[in-house]
Image (cartoon, rainbow, N blue to C red; front, side, top):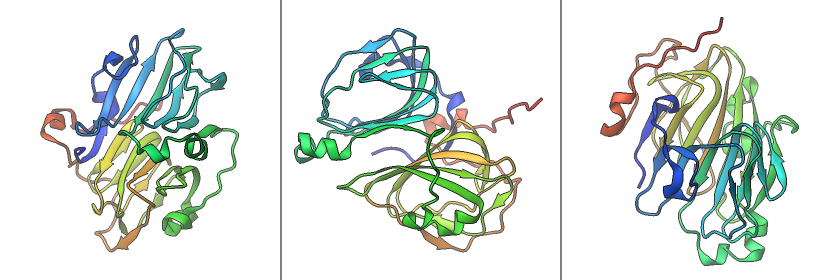
Length: 274
């Protein structure tokens, strides 16, 4: 089981050698991990020229390129490109065309019936370039219709078997939430850009959260706008709304962190803008 992390700035986490997860020659920052099933979420850094040959895996790989150019099975993924490689899929060759930084999510072992060629084809998501796509704003699908007036959304993945969803939400500056949320599934997120204030403090780009089911969170607001990648684990996302204390742009700093991370969880300075 993974620890409840809400929230940590990835900039504060140490880099480690990535050979332990089959990325020899690269470096890794573990955001969270499950020692029981081997799943983990991480930031990976790969040097130009790094490569991995074709290979089938018994786990899913989910990738979001933060910086650089990454070749996946002959297709170039540039900054802000997303892909999902389902367990059992053919190919999976990787090559760093430049120095690359990416978000990398690995599942635990996937059930045999989902590793067939047919199931893998249904579950795999080829390259999605966020800069070339229409942001459809399908908030109602996830019970988030209350956010639609001040934000846009792009759903990246809806698993045809489990209903698990990965999406990106972009809120406008000075959007202020009014109510708190709960979800009956695990939710994790990584802030790609901007600043976000919530009841536990102010998060900046690089903030990461792993939240167990039904944990109350929010309301949130942003003075700059914020772009966030969300992953739902354990089924289809639903949202339950409830009343909460009034929102403030100046909350106290009180992240929920395991003991091993508390020393790294001090307030993070606002990046300079000038």
